[in-house]
Structures are given as C-alpha cells and as structure tokens.
Length: 189
Image (tube, rainbow, N blue to C red; front, side, top):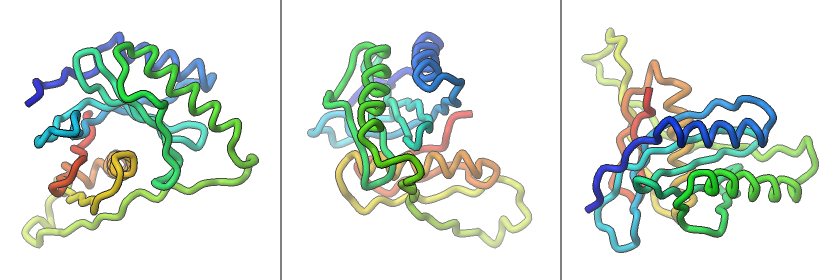
C-alpha cells in the first residue's frame, strides 16, 4: 500500500508551465486531474496519483506524480500513436518535463507533412439518466470502462475521459471506473 501522493506544488507547476511556454513560445493551459495507477507490477491496489495534462502541437501530454518527488510522463496523438521517453520514472520534475518535450519535438520533426491530421477519438461512454433527477441541474456521474490493453493505451483512454469530463463539467460530475488497471476521477477544480 502506498501513502497518499501529494498534489503538484506551486514550484512543480511553475517548472512545468515555464518549460511548456518556452517550448511552444506561448502560454499553454495546464489542467490538473487525478488518475489511479498500478505503481508496481505486483501491486494489487491502484494508487491515486495527481496528473498535469495539456494539449499542443497536435499532441496530448501527461505528467503523473507517483511519489513525493517521483514522476512519469507520456505524450500521444491518438490511442494508436503513443510515445514514452524510454525512462520509467524521474526524480526531477524539470528533467521529466524537458525530456518529454524534447522527445515530442524530435518525434514531430519526423511526423507527416503539415496538413495531415491524426484524429484523437476519446473512448465512448454513455450517460444513464435517472428519471428521478430529470429536473436536477446537478451534474450526472459517468461510468468509464476499459476492456484491457497495454498501459499506454489505457492511459490514453483515461486522458480522453479527463478531456471530455472537463469539456462538459457542467454535465459530468464524477467519472467512475470499472475494475481495471487504470481509471480516472473527475478533474480538480
């Protein structure tokens, strides 16, 4: 069992924000959320981990905080096109974000010509409306289920759920996962 992992602190967020704005030469909106991850292959329980997420240059980026000063990262264009940095974990947030941005820049340099788009199709999920809540203005909860796959695919699906929940935060309250290796809770406000 892992102890509760602290949220990203102001310094960590500042480091991420500075690196991202320097890389893209503009301010990019960072979003915070939580994800449940299996931190070790032998872990039976999932651990709630803070996440920083952003989209830019056709890519979606995720940094997971997996301990007081440990981090994981990945970027992806779609469920089928996902990338890591070749390193499982970082102990320095600056190195984590800079490596992620550099690997994505290198990959983008080898990408198809401008104008060719790779669509991101978030996982589909449906809303079951309770007839007794027909007049309620309160956001409804969403149920999220993943039918398996490699961790990167599961994480990409989770990021799609995060993005959709944020887009419709007036309609989606909590995203409740099925019993899978990875799941997402509603974004932080």
